[in-house]
Image 1: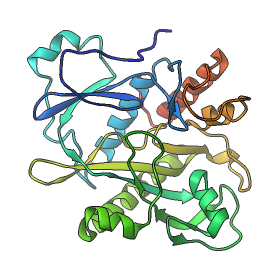
Image 2: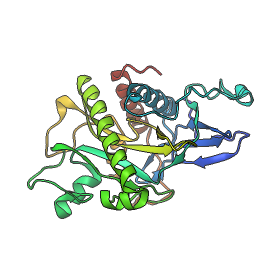
Image 3: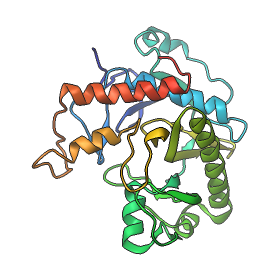
Image 4: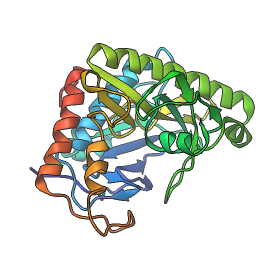
Amino acid sequence: MPVLLSTDLPFPVFRRGKVRDVYDLGSQLLIVATDRISAFDCVMPEGIPDKGRILTAVAAHWFAATEDLVPNHFRGNPRWPAGLEAYREALAGRAVVVEKTRPLPVECVVRGFLAGSGWKEYLAGGAVCGVPLPAGLRLADRLPEPIFTPATKAEEGHDENITFERMAEIVGMPLAMRLRDLSLALYRRGAEHAASRGILLADTKFEFGLSVADELLLIDEALTPDSSRYWLADRWAPGKHPPSLDKQFLRDYLETVEGWDKQPPAPHLPPEIIEGIRARYLDLAGRFGVTI
């Protein structure tokens, strides 16, 4: 199956992320979700067929399902400029035109279960991003209540978990409080819907930006398998990694690759790993009623 690993469109580049190529259209942005996939902050040599279309469709589903909580960068229904029409068919399903914002330099992470870097922090000090947690928790345990654990956004290298107080120093206390409250509300909305579809939303991250008029907007992506950790509810058991419908399948494989130090270049992916990732992403989309 064909994959799209990169784009070269005749528009100014706003930024190229690990997965998305973003072009500057003036007051709007063109966001193209490629089929690239990353893990441990390294982009894999192979892409995942249909991944860009899956991410775009799932994100659009959640933007629509949460716009009553916070407006997003689709606000105003931005239209494709005439100069883009020639590329519309080639980019179908993987590209969107959105309102341009000034992205805030923090990631808004919410955790409902103990996993990933949160689990490692808990083992080291009994807290995650400065939030103390009860003693005796196990890997994949459900937390007493969801917690807000922000991180810095790194253009290159690793994001860094930070305390809420450090986030407030970066963006100001009033905005930090608003981001925390919105992120928790978004997580609860996603977790409730996911639970009705037989999956647990273990954790997720949101990104926000400010419009020209300084209105806060949800941007980038929302509740996708790239930005979230989703577990099969009927196979979840604290104390071990539950089967997931996200990138954990890739991370688990990479942990078995001898000699790779989690630095570029990333190792090549076998066909069965590529298909395994694609199947999990499609499964998640289907549970949310999203068609590709």
